[in-house]
Image (cartoon, one colour):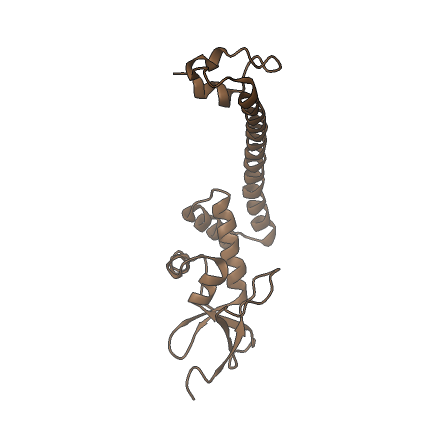
Length: 191
């Protein structure tokens, strides 16, 4: 019996999405003790939007590991690898490097108990939450300034005459409701 004949194929479906007819199949092992769905490295990479090389790198760094190998010696990954790689991606989006994530995983594995592992993870997440909230506040302020700048600039279309030279804009008196332009506008006019 060939390796292909000993597996059944199921479509990969990302959480919250409808099945895609063009998705490559998952490979489910009939011989596995768990009868869990297994997928090839390319299928895992496609499911999480990463390259095969990225998955191999995660594996080399000990961040994810193959569940087993097929008869053809291909790495087969269980469904929990999807969760693990998505976790890695989210940590990277939070600003952690792969070496930071590797240290976090080592810390989790070396923890004396689940309580200590949870405490370490909580410390990292609290720090990242503070950073995220700070970044959100910064982005909210930028959003407000962009809106104010666009409002200010929209009046230039009607208040300015086509003959007015750009170098006179920093001292423009045609915006009585906004005598001082937002910095995003004022900064563009300083030479």
